[in-house]
Image 1 (cartoon, rainbow, N blue to C red):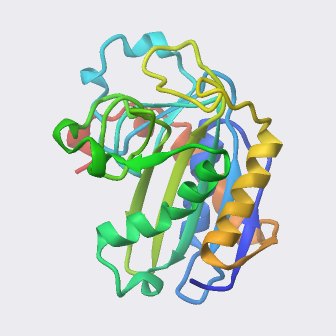
Image 2: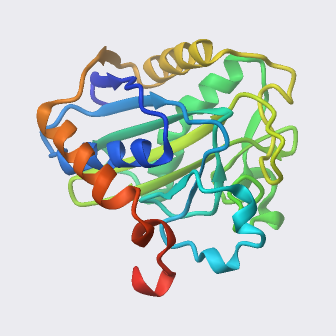
Length: 250
């Protein structure tokens, strides 16, 4: 792994802002760009939906409210507002010697470090729930092979997007109990209470120690900021992006 990453902790909270910023970072990423690790939070009662998710197949979708956007990655509806999320972007060539599955497991390994430092025993779903693997319209209750399982329950979720130049991965670490259905388990439900800042610091430490790298605090460049502002207004807040049916996106 590369020895130096940009670290971003930019104070945007809405679903549209968070996803617009990630895409802005991707748009400005080249094979020579310094890799990026970002930590962020969400507004209360926020959620995101998968890139190709058909909203007509989500029962009682309107009951979740309007504070959402569509992700650039696949998967199901993912509840936010009680979690810390991460995003990372690295050059594709850095994992050229690994298959997609090997690369996914490798990039998730810092989460293993994070949870184990909290005294939790964790497994991948593929290793202990192979007979129960199945996707769901709700991300936090379906089981994909590389979902992280603690005490038989899925915690958070992770997704990945690959291109010729980069690999993008993001995921969620639930800190607190959420009253909405299909929210899955959380650290608080497992008896561990962390503030957002405590969780971020532990995640940074886990990332650095796992990959033997240094995180260097960074600000957005002018190009990244301009791309973010455009994507936020012209894509991630629009009805076309949020509500379009699956048939219009293929």
